[in-house]
Length: 399
Ligand SMILES: Cc1cc2nc3c(=O)[nH]c(=O)nc-3n(C[C@H](O)[C@H](O)[C@H](O)COP(=O)(O)OP(=O)(O)OC[C@H]3O[C@@H](n4cnc5c(N)ncnc54)[C@H](O)[C@@H]3O)c2cc1C
Image 1 (tube, rainbow, N blue to C red):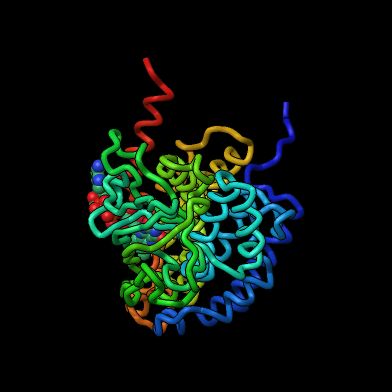
Image 2: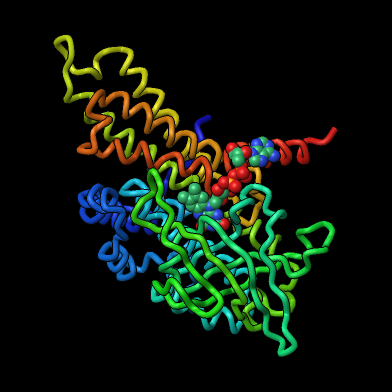
């Protein structure tokens, strides 16, 4: 007997309307200028201003704080569209989304009331900072510290690395050790909400060196943060005094939703690479016919399309499980692993399909090919995802 069920990709009317709006925004405002900003490694200020007007910095922030109050699934659909336009645009909202999540879930009422309305409008943007020059995957190995003064304030010292939106953000969620002797180390780690002036490269206790030069993911800045006695009051511990020693757990939770976010970025990149490959392969002719008609190329398109659909379904599944309040650590890891690899593979296949032109800066695929590998690294490398997935599979299937 046939049973009518919703397809897994079906969107609600609201989701259809908002993703269509963001797709048009990407087609009209992002794609035509992305190459220019990429080549100059310039921050896309006019695009970001328009994103503020569209409310895209407050997608998941509750309406009572001025946001749209939408779920993770809808957010992932929006991120896919932005990333399809240019991965760096989704990078501007990515760290902001993680900061909003940390505040919404762990912030005190005062912290939420103070930060969320300004974050919902994009008046201030958020960054998060775990990585250090010697530490990325092994987060418990960080060396930066915070010490409490006699007046009750805390002072942060240490060097942070790879902070996306490090310069232009107005607030950074920084993970440091407040009890360096703690064993296990994660119990002695705390997340501080550090306010700073956006764009200022030197404020008391904090220096921001010039942005790191990267192969791709340009336009959005990645910086170091050098803390030297940066003062933070006790009420800027995430969650207030009760948040002392809770930073690792809070950040790991945020990275789990962050993985769905990166997976959605992967789907957007894989989608755009697919579109470019489909178009070029039907226009370019060799041996008397469009290259799409050569079976070797048709097969590439078939694999790209299948990979793209699988990546999208994994991503939506992880997002929907999280929205339903179900445990989704395994699914988020799988989605991140698969979608980021799909983005890299689709980018490479699309580049091959473009032949010599794929290697030219005149063609969009050249940028996408340089942008895609970031997804294999940020928010946990593919190797780390496999560790997470394997561990969770074993936990859920004990004999
Ligand atoms: C453009 C960009 C933006 C970033 N933005 C941010 C940001 O906003 N905030 C932030 O905090 N960080 C950010 N990062 C840092 C990023 O999260 C780290 O680079 C990432 O976690 C990997 O850490 P690492 O570079 O120190 O590599 P390492 O941890 O040194 O790893 C090196 C290699 O060893 C592998 N490896 C490590 N441990 C194991 C293991 N146990 N088993 C098998 N293989 C292993 C890794 O997979 C990798 O291939 C960003 C990075 C980049 C490139």
